[in-house]
Length: 200
Ligand SMILES: Cc1cc2nc3c(=O)[nH]c(=O)nc-3n(C[C@H](O)[C@H](O)[C@H](O)COP(=O)(O)O)c2cc1C
Image (cartoon, rainbow, N blue to C red):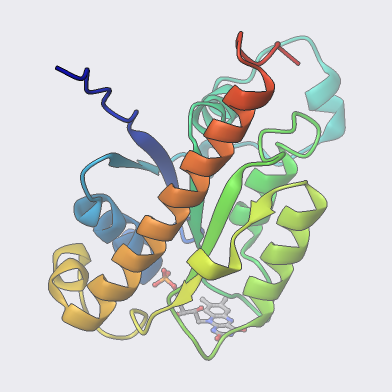
């Protein structure tokens, strides 16, 4: 009898760039969590508003900043990341950019498969800027897993988005492709480092 080896669960971290309590981007990341298929676990990161303003002086200090460590740890322990961010004044919201600035030096995005979900397809400046920043940080941006969905202004909560046929199909497709790319990246790492990736 052949031995079955279960594939490891792919852990995807979903981050909303909006701090609003009732947020369409927040609803999309929560819908992603609800929609996660077998073999994929989506964890929503909710700590952007706890991060201090990025300051390289703080980064070089010896004191550990708990909120920053939690953000870095959440990224480190994820196989892939989805970011769903609104656009403010044709740019990335400060809280979202601040979070990215905190991990430029610590490198958590390096080679990390990332998808961008745009909840407002008419807005492209923030998406373009996010993509440029993530590429600069060495992220493995997956255009094929990055989708635009008409969720902003639709008046739907997470359950409504997850139940909407068009929205859920697009989001599930993005999750499936991202998980597939994360699996391939993990397999390639295992091939290169059969005894485990050495600590950086
Ligand atoms: C200060 C501010 C600036 C905004 N600037 C833009 C913009 O430049 N382009 C755009 O398409 N929408 C803009 N919007 C609209 C938001 O991106 C939109 O309402 C989005 O759905 C908010 O996301 P949320 O529901 O997740 O908070 C702006 C909203 C605010 C509050």
